[in-house]
Image 1: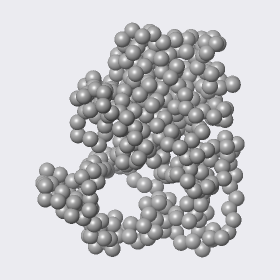
Image 2: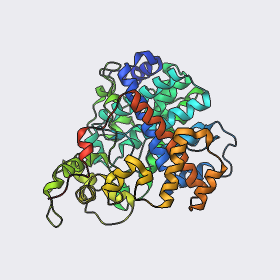
Image 3: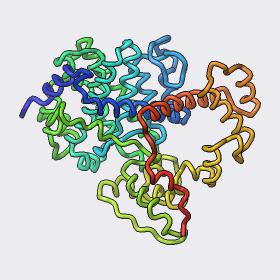
Image 4: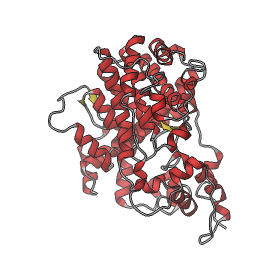
Length: 438
């Protein structure tokens, strides 16, 4: 067998920003922005708060350089910041995904930016690290034949994520091929993650990408300090990574077309806060919604792996039960339509806010929030203690105010990037939630 581990390690250690095509770099930048937004939206979820509390428990390193996103200063070592931010990014099923059945941004982006912050890394190295991380996660999943590995009960983000995070961290640390191979080996020995969370709606799924990011950063840092990992991670017959996670792996997928075919650019942005495997079913439900009426039956076909993963009989429980359920997702699409315009069960309100929120039929509390958000976007330097007191007077806590400011500031940035790149929603978006049901 070709020395796959070393071949991959040599490619990672030699990767430079200019080796990555411009269109791939542009896509990765947008995926990183999307990940930051997902983490800001997910940072207040209870499972994120639990992971954060663990990372900040007594005994953690004080005044460490890497920050928890949405907080003003560095507080954690890089690996632990990657853990918290990865959990936040995956906290509400909004983060990007690839059809190889892996989430990428919630693993790679937290690992890269936590370590880059601690190293004061140059932007060029950050871009190369993102490209390496995305590519290795996807290729390692494809090598397992993801449908087969998933049917063995593995959550592939947790299985493949440590490898991608280690690859990205190795680029940032400037490891040579030997130590990069060690980093991959040390990451692979930490791979794991079970899909048992759908049995009872447990929060472990939210934890998996953060743990993968943490494992990858730790692996690369340990390799840089001289701790060796198996340099035949993929080839080993006894205890090799491929054979451990798949009954019929495809080793060539790890290196075929390496540096020529960039899988990262094929990553999907998520329009819906549900499992990516049922997005096609949600699209179909929205397209057929005008032909459906409440009380009528619905028949949905699913491939075997999706049926096992998302076709289970839905019973009300946790948010994760609903988000992973194909039955719930299709029902929500048929009943509610486009989430943004239907969130208040009134598409008119959403359009009123988009046109001029000051004349919209909203509460004084909502108007105060939007006044502050607009000020942050347009004239942040003029905000004052008086603005904060107004919000407190409407019942917003200091944590609420911080979240409003952080999300507003971030979306001001992403909207400017969308304007510069001339992005626009597709035509179907404008009709979602507006087409009446027959």
